[in-house]
Amino acid sequence: MKRERYENSRRLFWKAERLIPGGVNSPVRAFNSVGGNPVFVKKGKGAYLYDVDDNIYIDYVNSWGALLFGHAFFSVVDSIQQQALLGTSYGIPTEAEIELAQLFVDAVPHVEKVRFVNSGTEATMSAVRLARGFTGRNKIIKFIGCYHGHADSFLVAGGSGLSTLGIPDSAGVPQGAIADTLLADFNSLDSVALLFEQFPESIAAVIVEPVAGNMGCVAPVSGFLEGLRKLCSQYQTLLIFDEVMTGFRLARGGAQEYFQVEADLVTFGKIVGGGLPVGAFAGKKYIMDQLAPLGPVYQAGTLSGNPLAMSAGIQMLKRINRDEALYRRMEHKTAYLEEELKSLFEEFKVPVCINRVGSMISLFFDSDAVTDYASAQCADAGTFRAFFQGMLEQGVYLPPSPFESWFLSDALTQEDLDHTVEAARTVLSGMVK
Ligand code: PLP
Image 1 (spheres, rainbow, N blue to C red):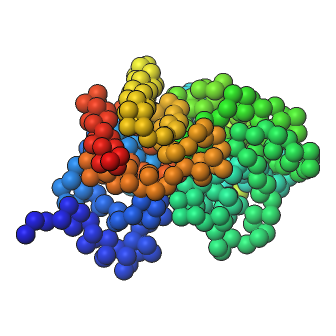
Image 2 (image 1 turned 180 degrees about the vertical axis):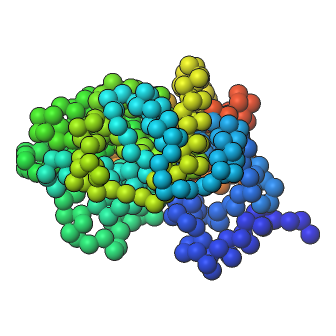
């Protein structure tokens, strides 16, 4: 009897569901919005994922953006192995923390000090606490459809899994925890200005994904980030760039370098750990020194600055430093994919809006311009679902949600890109009959 294509994955998912809520340890990994079961991965190498049924996929998720150089990148794996032999955690300072901090400060503009944590959520949560402690104010502005991790104060009108699963706010978050979270529309300076007029002396921080990647990929319109900078300076509010996705992806110096806009605090995750659990938040000395043990803002972590994670991060940043052409190459690869997909969709007369910034890209079916959460929500989720399943069948792994950006890795070759476009041609031929 012929074996079913995803048989082993299906079996593992049944087992997982009995032991882990929803069978997954993070909601966006479930295939709720695209149907079917998640595939279970056996290994990753370079641009490819191998599942437990021996299907091979070209990966456009790359651990949600963490793997800039693809899977099992040699120098990262090697350094983790070397470090593991010396111990996996000490809870005592190491030289590696200084080395990564130096690489970090050298790369990221306007940053003098950095603190390492274990996830993007910890980074954003701590940055907001620091902003509140520093300014003595409580309110923050976040943008509808932006996702900053799962800390209580951000779980209102969030993107990512909240959009994917259609959850406006999370149960279990007390009203008090979000009472000081003000909501504005991404790309609308007017909506931000209005909040500042209402609360001129109460807003500690504006937190923004400089390129929104959690409602699909949505670029800032010209002047938006600059306008935020101006408003924040005018009202003595800190501007926080949440660069968990964009950090070291758009440019070595992240969105601050890419858009030439200065933030007061910057948060990182993903690429900084090269696939290990790391986050970081950083800024000028006079703000960062408000943190304990120097200042009154408490923040801590048993595994923070973990030696395995630091060694992986050091290899990632050194690799980025060595390669002057890296970001031009990433731009070129992603622009090629964008152009090829655009002409393919035109050929098949399938209306689609393709948004791209650097190596972040996503498709919105049946949409005109997508510039904010409301326009992203208009995209046809049913067509995405069919496209996703078709691409999976053709060996291309896309994010299992219409509200997530795709992330390219430098491991992708021209052949991989061409194979992806050919796969899309086959899928569209089946969809448009
Ligand atoms: N901020 C942004 C912009 C993110 O995209 C994410 C996660 O995808 C986070 C924060 C939270 O990071 P983590 O999942 O590492 O906690």
